[in-house]
Structure formats: structure tokens, C-alpha cells
Image 1 (cartoon, rainbow, N blue to C red):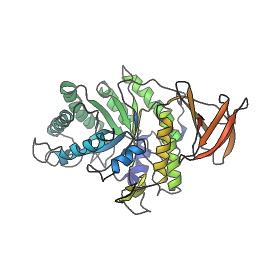
Image 2 (cartoon, one colour):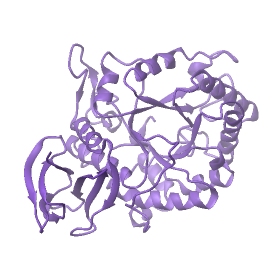
Image 3 (cartoon, rainbow, N blue to C red):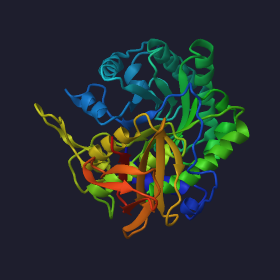
Image 4 (tube, rainbow, N blue to C red):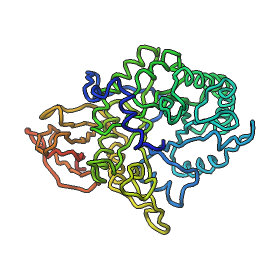
Length: 423
């Protein structure tokens, strides 16, 4: 979860067969509704880097419509003496989250100098110690809806030095999985929290980890359009089907765009956040975690400091304790638009670059629409006769339109619009 900008390009090249295949993969089974296991939760969330929120901070996360946070559950912080576990910091965080009906995705991660030389967990003794610690944490918080994720990016040498080894990771995951299965079978475990690294993922699946995991978590980072992730989800789903005897969901456990990347801006970041969340919703991804909640620093030119949807500095006695960026309001708009509505279909319009997504709840319908084309243009969207309200990415009303036999004419740009029936 750290040094994202430094390792992103390398991760992208390693996580797909070749960089050229990144946008070229083709899979027909995309942008279609998917029935997901009813036992698996859903919602959007943000990555955080704290256990003690500032006053008003969790409320601000909840007010944007987020229902999850993803946070490192750090071994060396919670076991400083052999076999002595201190989860007090996470008790405080859970208390703050539960006041606002937010759930936790905790990452069981990294080494512990009591047992390991660095961040990786490579020996049998260290694996057993890690599993004992993970099981103690799961028992401590049992029944509170936590999702436990085994490690963070073990396919990356920054997090699994000196060199990633899928067999080493599998041995660790199996130690944790077997302990959970035996003693806390109702707790949800997921993994492996990698990029879209198909060889590493298949190594996990071949070893039987899908028998224990409630979901497969990946980090679909990219510096191009978020819609390109649809083909990777499709390919991964087919790979899962080769090894699993049941439906195993895919979650987007960490993915964001830095406003300091070349060619980016805060407005572009907001557009990409919305398109990322909508792409995931339309491709059967039940949980989408945006990286990052707040900026990691104040340097406007440092990409690692500009993944957040709010600024870094805390502001006491403010309605917004952290100043929102455009992406904050975009998230609030998308989450409000999707609340209780399920993806139904992608409507065919002008070209493959145009995305018109229909969501429904009972007899009610809503449309989210945008284009990846560089130039804005108008399309007609067929809707039942009536009056519709068009809202922009910030949630502001743009105009009202009436539908007739020719449909509703709307202008598509790279910034999504949201069309709802007027009551």
C-alpha cells in the first residue's frame, strides 16, 4: 500500500503477460450482469493509513457513501513479544468504524523482526507464528464482519524481498487458511492482493487456495482507461473457473489514480474514480476499494502524495475536517446513484467507446453514461416516455429532458453523467 507511484510502472509490466497485451486482451464475457454469492458482501471503500481517525473523519468517509475501509493489520505492531498480542489500536478503529456502519478489510501483512529478517515470511517457523497471530486476531474480532486478506502484493519484491516466490506465499496462505478453517470457519479470508499477475494467481489456484478463500483480491492499477480492466476481470474469472468448484468473486482491493501523474489533474482523477467504480459495478466486482482516502503529503508534484480524494491537512472545527477534492464529490455522486440499484445491461449506442450503463431497482431505472473518445458528442438513449433529470459528476443538476420515440439526446464526454427519472 506504500510507494505506489514508484512501483506502478514495473508492477503493470510484470502483472500482465506483456505490457502490449494490457489494452489488447479481448474477452466477450464483459459488461454483463453477474449473480454473486449472497453470502459475500458488497460496497465501495477506501484505503486508510491510520488506526486513530481525526474527529469527524470516519463520518466524512461514510457521508461519501463508502461502506468499507482497507487497512494494514500489521504483525510487528501487534506482536512485540513472542505470543503476546495487543490489538488495542484496532479495537479503537473498529469502534469508530462501527459507529458509522463501516466495515473493515484488514490486511494480514508483513514480517516481524521476532521471526523474520524482512517483510517476507519465508520459513516454516515464521509461517506458524504468523498463522497463530492471524488466528488470534480473527478470534478477537470474530463475528464483526471483517474480511481478512492474506498479505499485500506478495508478487512484488518491495513487499516480499529479496524476490517474490509463489510457493513461499502459498505455504504461508495455507498455514493461515487451515487455522481459520479449523477454528474460525465463519470468518472470511481472501487473497492474494496482487496486481493482475496471471502466473502468480494461477500458482495460488493450482495449490488449492480457492478452496479456502471467499474471494480473489487484485489491484488493477493502470495509467490508461479504467474500462480496460473489464477484459482482465473476464480472463481472471475464466482462470478461477478452471480451478474452483464454486463461484468465487473477484474484488478490486486497491486501485487509484494519482492527480500528480503526467497528464493528470484533480478533475481528471475525479472522472477516473467514477469510471473505475462504474466499470467494477458493471463487471461483477462486489467490493471496490479506492486508493487512497487522503493525500499522503503536501507535495503537489509527488505522485505518492496525490492519490487521495481529500487533502492531507486536518482542519479542526470544519464541516469537512479534510478538504474534499473533486474526487470526493464524484465518489459521493456514484455511491448515491448506485444505492440499491443493480447493473442490468450496457446499452448499445454510437460506438464501442461510448459507455451507457443501465441500473435498475424494481421498476425504476437509472443511466450512467460517458465516453472514452477524446471529443464530446451527442447520442440518443432510448428510455420510457417521461421526464428525466441529468446530473453531472459533482451531483449538480444539469438540466431536465423529455423522452419520446427518439429517446433522450445527451452529450457524452469523459466525465460521466447520471440520468434519473423525475418523480
